[in-house]
Image (tube, rainbow, N blue to C red; front, side, top):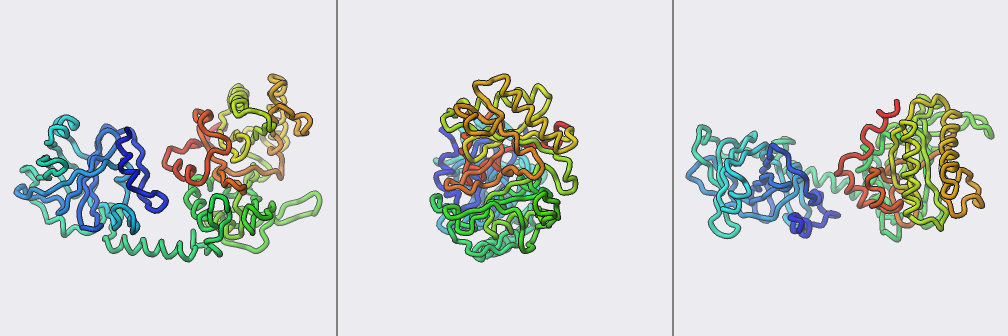
Length: 470
């Protein structure tokens, strides 16, 4: 049984900002944290790292440096290791509703085997925090009731903890933490995200999934750090849906009115001479586009500051409707094997639709024609190696029972859906970066907003993307 089940069952993570309970591997140096928590009653929470979780005790009066003080410490449910970073306000109606401040943090050393000591009901340990130091003990005297006692040593005299009323990390008082929460809450109420006011924030854009315009803006705010390197400074096209995704949507390539975080550039167009295109320069530009009803983001394979030299190859595995998921996944493996033969490191993401996307960062190809020719040749090579499985020709009659290796995104003026972008379709899926090792676990349309946000807590599967294939 997962030891964090109790923790997860007590919390609604759509409402509270507390971290979801996921067991992690413990480090050699064991951490501890003490959080001042004003909930129904004012108390302090002592948390000690053990076996990938935080063993936790609620200490009503808080720790005392006086060895004569035997402070009640009530054993509560185990918390995830990530909880040691939590400071904020748990909303009303939620378990433990109230303000949480990081009172102290650091490392601790158990003087005997921790597991044995815990079972025995007598844990002796040394704290190496910023405020609490020296030898301490936890002694069980009745079921979940323990006593927290300062052992006598050279540093047992210390000031009263009640005089220490600021966060060890942010420097804020409890009142300041609570006030900041009110400011954030009011901003959300008014629909302000990244300094951009979202009109009609409660309007349902994805009716089937009941996702509002404000929720979309907040989703992009949370993924911006990972998404921005793939959209900033690249010419943009978006899928705009003024009436929501169940109404008429259109592909938008031109900005119209100027807006925050966005710049324009004039480009030659064979049909119309020069036209204004646009690109994002900072995070607020993504939110500004959401405010303008753009919910799906597509980008060029080159940057504005080096427009004629693309740096990303894109392959879209587009299966005939009769093709099984197993064959699509094999298509990804076969494409990767071909790219590996060319010593090219590639990266995988879900499309949010029927297939997968494989991206290859490259600075070796000097022009759009080089990029286009190389991509086409890769697709043709797959067609030659596995003629019964793959096709490089986009015509429908050629694609029956096969997977089209779509190489045509690799031409000047073509775009592909950006990593972390929502798809403007009924089921609100995300085009999400994943590891190749996850291929058999994640469907092409298997990741929605909630799952995407959960994945931000994991290590970035595309870390170092622009540093390979130099």
